[in-house]
Image (tube, rainbow, N blue to C red; front, side, top):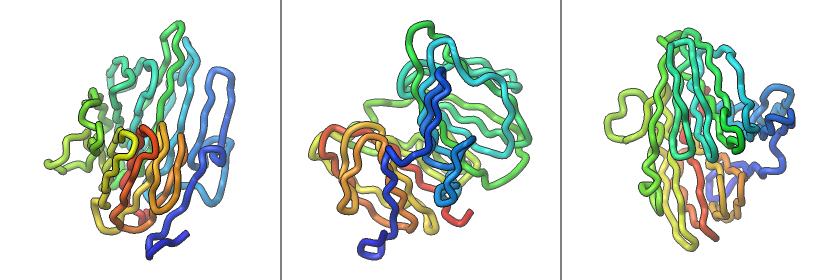
Length: 244
């Protein structure tokens, strides 16, 4: 779709791919596992955005990755992380986890809570360099810092201006919580980048469209976007290179 020279696509929550394994209920914004949609393989360097629910005492056992930047954003509950680099930690809602798989790494993410399900977003970004030494980082999010503003949580390696965790890609992630009736402007960080905005909770309007819980908009060109909350809303902005 095109509005005033801005090219974009709306992705409604109910059009995503899905999988129900009992212990895992997953919604896939892009082709993943048994879900394949040739029109939704990736958005530039953004390869995966999975919206997962993991039952208590269940999780993802040890498995390998390479040459991918993997970002996990817990929305509820907790996950216990372990990897072949020797890292062992628990990540909870209000934190963010980043792993550069690089030359290869094994990891597991388990919900060891006996009563509370874990809900999370797992995001994969194609890196801008291959076979680097694997790395792991984890950080608490300043929740107050995203109230009616954009809080940077991911930035490119070498960016000394933003406050987020760095990854090997010219990509920036922002979280925001907008109160009803508030507006905020987002300007694409780099020429040649596009913006993927994912609504976590609430309703917003953008480019004349209303987006609700788990809806998304993919804007393929460098633009200035005005985002207005129609009711209290929380959303994630992923700013990524499009030529990938």
